[in-house]
Image 1 (cartoon, rainbow, N blue to C red):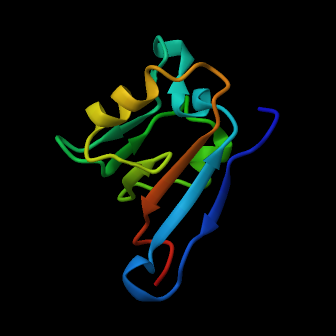
Image 2: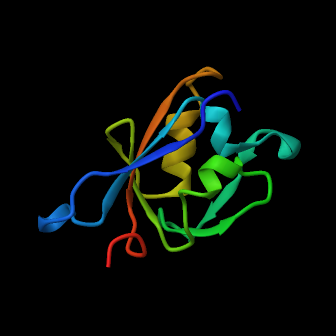
Length: 109
């Protein structure tokens, strides 16, 4: 990967105290090319909570995501499930940068 994923904390106070932004240089950093371009992470049934990180996930992204994280938005568009994430990713061409907003309970104590 030319540009690593970059995680920044948005806020340490108030209602968004545990929201983080993960900036990706290319949507393919979320995909498992060996699995036909499917997501390289799994979510709980009808939720946007990460339950598994697959081995194909970019190492830079893997360093920033954790099981139990909840994806709140992709490029400022709300995400409530894996299906919604896929619907938002599908029309984006390869090379499109992404901004993921995550609720990360393990990051901020």
